[in-house]
Each structure stands twice: as C-alpha cells, then as structure tokens.
Image 1 (tube, rainbow, N blue to C red):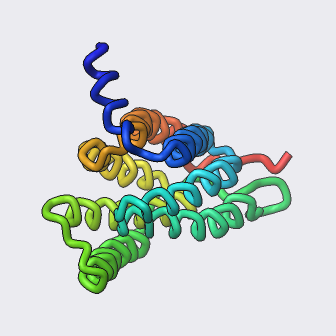
Image 2 (image 1 turned 90 degrees about the vertical axis):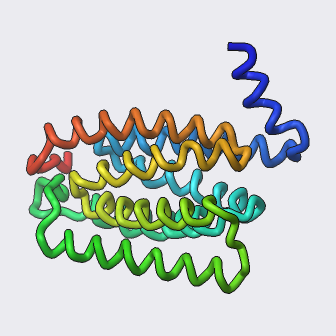
Image 3 (image 1 turned 30 degrees about the horizontal axis):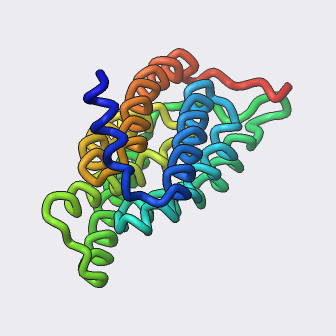
Length: 210
C-alpha cells in the first residue's frame, strides 16, 4: 500500500503547490456534483460549476485541450441544465427523468461526431498531437459532450456515457501525472453506476415542487 501512495504522490514532487490545492478542490466539488446528480438534486449544477471552472485552468496548464473544452462546455451546459431541471411541467412538478427518444439518439450521434471533428481540428491548429493521448482525449471529450447534454435533459442514458468515459479517462490521467484526478474518475465510475440504478427507479416519476 505504501508503494501505491509513494507512486501517486511522487507525480507531484515538481508540481506547484497552488496547482495541487486547486486540483484537490476541483476533485472535491466534482465528487459532490456527481453525488447530487445521483440524488436528482439541483445542487449538481453549482457544485459542478465550481469544479469545472477550476479544471479549465488546470487542464490548460497541462495541455489537455479536449478535456479543457469539456469543462468549459460543462460550465455552459450547467446553466442550461439548471434551467431545465427547475422548469415546471405543471403547477406542482418539475421535469421528470425519462429515456432518450429516437430523435435524441440521432442528435447524440451528431453531437459525438461533431465534437470529434471539432476537437481534432483544434489539436491540428495548435499542433498538440501527442501519440495515443490526444486520440483518447478526443474520444472522451466526445463521449462526455453527449453525456452532459443528456444529463441536462434528464435522460437516463446519460449515465451510460459517463461510465464509459470515466473508465477510459482513468489511465489517461494517471499517465499525465494527474493522480488525484485519476482517482476521482475511479470514484465517479462507481457513483455513475449507482446513479444509473437510482435514476432508473425514478424513471418517469414527476418530482414535487414543494
């Protein structure tokens, strides 16, 4: 066990203290956000916005352009999701959790492909290609873009995208030396599995406004 801790913390020996502190804060609020999402609680958005804005800065420093864009996109989608989650469908109920429609599935594919093309273009323009890391970053970015969009619309399938993207992200972050973030993605994978189970139980049930 000591060897594991030594390996994790050895990655931070030459990292500025302020980046370590910021990463830990971002990780904390990231976990809180997913826990609130699992509970179908509106606090998913303010906590998530704090985490994402910090990660935008950290990922820019580390040159992970795709994931940096993910977090910038999360911030914007959080505003949109915050609105949708608090929108009333009648006098006494908020928007319910539902399954993805055929139209939304097609839209998901379009978002996925458009994101791949857009992020690949950014890597090309800024000459940031870095072996398998860049390709993995582009893939996870596209997966998470769809997941965030579906989450804002309160679609059950958003959790499937989170689970797949989180699992792929774990080795990427360990390789880049962001061990705390990699551990975060392990936790997020576990929470996302429970989130799917929890949301499935609430499927099509209208949340009370009071």
